[in-house]
Length: 239
Ligand SMILES: *Cc1c(COP(=O)(O)O)cnc(C)c1O
View 1: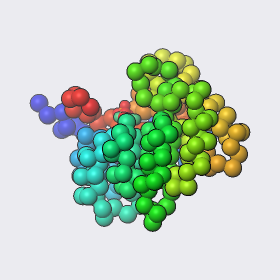
View 2: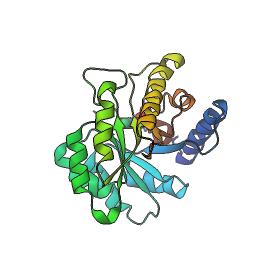
View 3: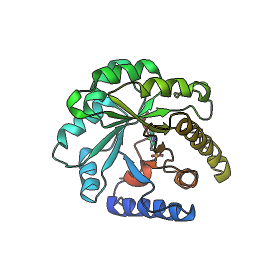
């Protein structure tokens, strides 16, 4: 049985936009204070094109080779903004520096230094979010909160990078107040950096996914990363 027969991208996208608008209103925030990042990993280029035709501009990808193949097919889409949101290995940093506008998953200085050196001058600075291991899970990527100021200071000194904010993927939980807690900690971490580095362009909280958008927006998310809620379920596989 096909699981795609009932999927209509326009309906999903409109519903996701309504969820975001409702969450912003419920939080007393303005329309436009947060936007949707459509996470298109494992989904075909044709769906990205369809979402673009419906007005979506920000897309997130996790796997470098997969992303480059889609970008090659979608080179005609004006104004599309590619965000790299997956774990980043050193040997893939050059391709990311050359083919993305944003990287959300910087969690160590070595990767930042490589991106800074490899960013082509003609493209302008690469927008960066530092990924924080906000639930302090030993096995997870992301920098620990206590190490954040030092990494931020290092990135701020790199001319080809522009430090925009923080990203986190908290440990999943279904209870709304438990969902909000790590997002609140990430917001407080950003506020701490804003105080410490008042001249830095720190305006971004990349947090919230399909299951916890409302909690993230309540705590100040500015970019919510939605995969399933926009493109439907992903094939089970390893992704
Ligand atoms: C896959 C992914 C998402 C989207 O997850 P959904 O639950 O499908 O919305 C968001 N952020 C990151 C980093 C991801 O890898």
